[in-house]
Length: 384
Image 1 (spheres, rainbow, N blue to C red):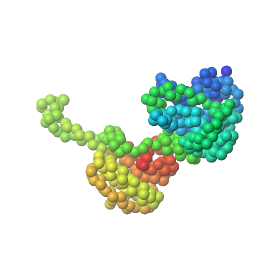
Image 2 (image 1 turned 90 degrees about the vertical axis):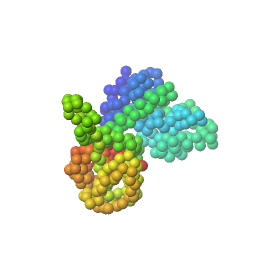
Image 3 (image 1 turned 30 degrees about the vertical axis):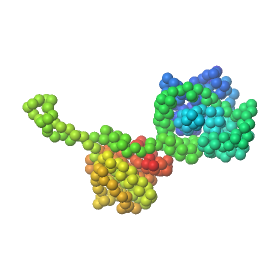
Image 4 (image 1 turned 45 degrees about the vertical axis):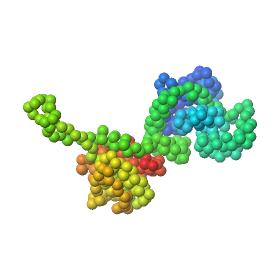
């Protein structure tokens, strides 16, 4: 009997992104569905791919590959978790129309699917544009049904995969599976970016994937993260604290922990005034909770303009530089001065810098997060 696991590595040899993602998804053969489908295991909160061996055995290799990619795209695009349409009761619901809409969106990017699959520009969808989102196709389908109630009815709807059982999974389990999948997609994207090879993934889909795996900025969480993981201790004598080694003979030690944070602001010519304004708006929010040192730079650090932004202060944005970009400059400045954490606000448009002696995080806009000049294992956070 056909065993998909034996063929997956060969089928995805030219698809680095999907090859990495595939390794994180269990494949299970079953005769309980006619074709294939992705589902969440209610016990493990993991995505699994179910397939009918007899269905796959009838397919050519290019068709097998596209069926795999089709199912993986459902996961990547969150078609069966976070993006389900809402019904009249305000509840997310899996519907046949949504199934067709998601298939139309995915199949725009695949060219070797089994015959009869739904596809923009083909059959009843001849007037549908290619490359649109599932939500766009959903609205278009609703319009078609409104104008012609019999639209899409017939012996076959062109769907080959199975979407049953999603409503039976508890929301908490779905949320857990979604977060795990997001981490797996991130690993796959990092591997593809590292090797500069995304296979057949289009630039448009690549941008969408990168956008989905970026974390939206939450300054409270960012600050908490840096304080917890980048702490330095300062000790002083205190009679109120009992010395554990010599109780009531020597004074105890009072320990206070603070984090010395540097925030480097890229003021090179490629960073627009709008971006600088957005960065300063976020720093005004951060200043409600902490004090930090601002380090303006382009190819060099403008040391005369380095200053401490006191907690509770509000400041207007200003441009003090407009040259090229070199991330080594702020890194060297911070490395020499014993900072505990380093946040760089930038458009990421320069070569990868030297290593940082303290924890370093990058903050940029969504546009540049999807188009980084270099790859890094350090965290990149998106500022809206």
